[in-house]
Length: 265
Image: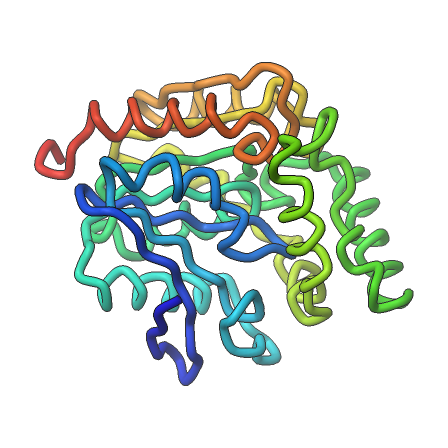
């Protein structure tokens, strides 16, 4: 692990490989270990950076009233500190929201976007009834036993993670902090829908065919809204498609990065 200071916080990140940079942003209630198969699979060709967002992994505790753009400032600080901008920037689920907002705020740091099983914010992509149901579930989990925090986000897999990653998934879930789950309540009303049409870099959409948290209809909305977006559908994969079908996911990212080297922007 390496560390960078941003907004008075210590932000941890992993770095592996040597080549064009790809920066990976994990989902909510997770940490950078979520990208283990992609770090292992892409480091032969790319410089892969995976952070622990504030409040996750080895990064500092999440401050009160931390906002989406604060996450973005911290992510930008990681990219600048390692001297990797502009970079391919990929995010899954909540991480895709952070990646979208990074592009809106700091487009000079982004060569391409890789958006996986994500949303234009929960408010921007979910029907009101589903939005309220998720908020209620988060509140119930926060009011319950601390060791149940890993269940704050059900339906992450179609069948389960790849067998060799099952233990890792359990370890990540066991390390979830209450403040990280609580922050999602404040983020529930994020709506980035109007920003999608402004994305002017090559964009890859990677979606689990059987994702029930961010169904393929949301992927189709992204595909229609973002000029020139490419959609790669991963068969037999749910919301965390990078962990359920890691080889297919990694190959989609590899081919996209090959097709859009940093100098092509």
